[in-house]
Figure 1 (cartoon, chains in turn yellow, green):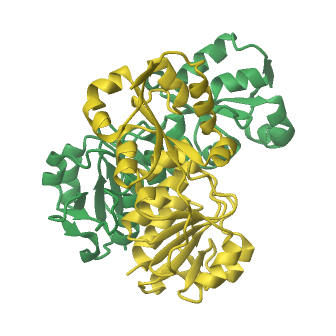
Figure 2 (cartoon, chains in turn yellow, brown; figure 1 turned 135 degrees about the horizontal axis):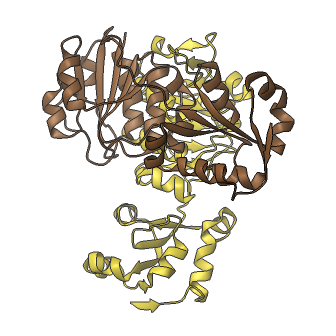
Figure 3 (cartoon, chains in turn green, yellow; figure 1 turned 30 degrees about the vertical axis):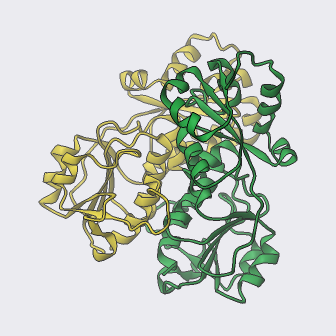
Amino acid sequence: MKEIQSVKNPLIKETKKLNQKKYREQKGAYLLEGFHLIEEAVESGQHLMEVFVSERGMKQWSEWLQEQFADYYVVSEEVLKSLASQPTPQGIVAVVAQPEEKMPAFKGGWLLLDNVQDPGNVGTMIRTADAAGFSCVVLGEGTADLYNPKTLRSTQGSHYHLPVLRADLKDLVPKLQEKMPVYGTALDRQALDYRQVQAQTDVGVIMGNEGQGLNKELQELSSKNLYIPIKGQAESLNVAIAAGILLFRLLK
Amino acid sequence: MKEIQSVKNPLIKETKKLNQKKYREQKGAYLLEGFHLIEEAVESGQHLMEVFVSERGMKQWSEWLQEQFADYYVVSEEVLKSLASQPTPQGIVAVVAQPEEKMPAFKGGWLLLDNVQDPGNVGTMIRTADAAGFSCVVLGEGTADLYNPKTLRSTQGSHYHLPVLRADLKDLVPKLQEKMPVYGTALDRQALDYRQVQAQTDVGVIMGNEGQGLNKELQELSSKNLYIPIKGQAESLNVAIAAGILLFRLLK
């Protein structure tokens, strides 16, 4: 246990850089905030490289911290605030190593995200895929970073329950299709009503961009494109809501 | 058309106060940001009390503005920014009168929100209720304000497509039940699997707080409590995702 009082401490200055994607990729690490997520990271066997806890946090978690970690830093509220993305951080921040990405076997449910830009939507869809019993989530080009603090917060820890990978979906979809149908999504009624599709044990679903929907090339690659009939005057559903409806319908 | 260059202008100072709920209620008005939402407000016959547009906004919308409004203000970027909740506002902000709340007939789909605290969740659920063909959304105690800028942004204009009211759910539920079943939601498996319930032409659904779920008293009042089976290791679904799955299932 060491103490850090100043935001100018070199370790703090280095660590803060992990709020930027560029540095996260350079270092192969990311920042994780809040006790619940950090506990999930420990339980799922992640490698926690550093742990920073405020004095207030110490009062709540010192016993747990001593059990879990050979070493950690007790920092001032100001230092903790400088590391965290939220205005009122929960009192604990960790630096976690990005795990190696391993492509699992092509079976079960696969959720593929193409150019989904909002980190909250990406995190919520990872959480939903977990709850629906999916096997894997793949983040395609243009999709928000898993290690963005907002994405992590929205996952509620589900990214520790199933693999979340990055891949080029145009390469992946044809390979996946050798083992399962991969459904695209479309806003127009020329596509297939999702209620016409039976639940399956192996199934892929591609969700697209919030504004533009799924890109044409992936729509053409997909086994079929599904739509959710809109009954009111809304133009569309939020992409994470649409994913929730489809994931809970399509996987047996 | 008048010009305002200074954030110290008394009208601007007054208008800015509408970012606080207390003042919105006092004045019976709210701020609406962005062209898309303002266009929807005009088309649905809302009363726009003031319109503020930046010089950049004028380049895009001056023709439309002249057609729609007898008068409006052209303001500096700085003034516009001071009114808007987003760091990069879209160039147009309006003051809109809160419409009178009228309880519609008890038929069709009714979505009731109890103590849902996140404005993004509330707005997304209003948008989803619209898309699912629901007739009414009721915001119960503790639920985020419809006129919070984040709620409005998430509705994508759906609150102009169906009535959104405030009411005490403990009073409303028994009255609504004279005409339709009103389902609560629960996280435990003692509740009824939602897939056991058939779609109906008149149906009520109550969604509860993000952390605690639906409060006990409303669970006891409800016709039945439904749960969505969670298959993976996720502890729960985001409340708006759960609502999406239920609303698209339960209304015929």
